[in-house]
Length: 145
Image (cartoon, rainbow, N blue to C red; front, top):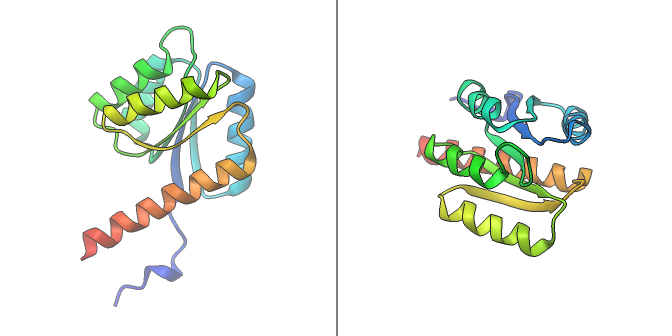
């Protein structure tokens, strides 16, 4: 019998993408306090696409408004690359903009966990990590069945 309930969960691989280095540091620190997260932070779209391929994150937290490649273009490329993890959208823009971006990402086949106004609150981040962990557990159970 293989009882995985007693084994510690593997670290959740997280990719943070935001052109604001303060926001990146804040999110990385909050994830560090939650524990069990392997975090990669990028401030530009092109290196983030490489990190997506190399790091294979289970959770992507992505700003929508960035100078070289905005969040929508990045999400389009992530979907084209086959990213199948959870996505959290961040933006300082109006809620209607976040909602529109969420619909676009869903149309590209991405699994959106939430869209939040910056700065993201610790309780919201905890909830998003928990949702991704639940999705991972459900996928493992489905494979085992």
